[in-house]
Length: 169
Image (cartoon, rainbow, N blue to C red):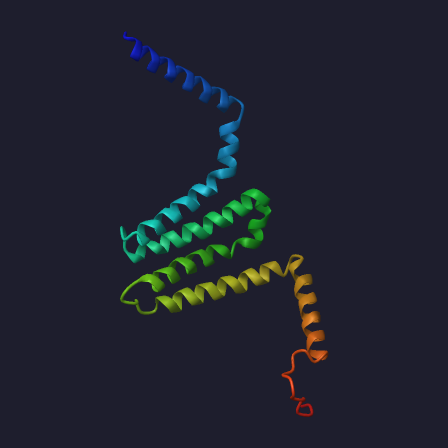
């Protein structure tokens, strides 16, 4: 063998040894457990890039939007605990709504009924997310916001200047 081939073989052996050592130390397992949702997010962003660089048609935005929303949600669950999925499950519907809405927004001519489907799915998703969050500490945040809003109206900050109430009910 020539010295050029010896260097290549030696480099290959060193790289193989480093990969095996890092694998035994758990580096790849750690990265795989933490970063896999970013791969889903990256595919969604790649699909968006393909559309905006005029390499794909508007219908690819449906899976692109879905993958971006799912990638973000899965990364949040991966970082902060999978128990969040019991509250964030309506985001699965929201992902579909985002993808369909992007398709409606960027397609030409505008397809019929697609906006209605996107708005319906988005609204259902937000309502379901609201009700699932009501079983958490979010109910306390809502209560405090309602109290603050009531105090704001009582103090007169909500009234237009120079006008008075019409005398009640």
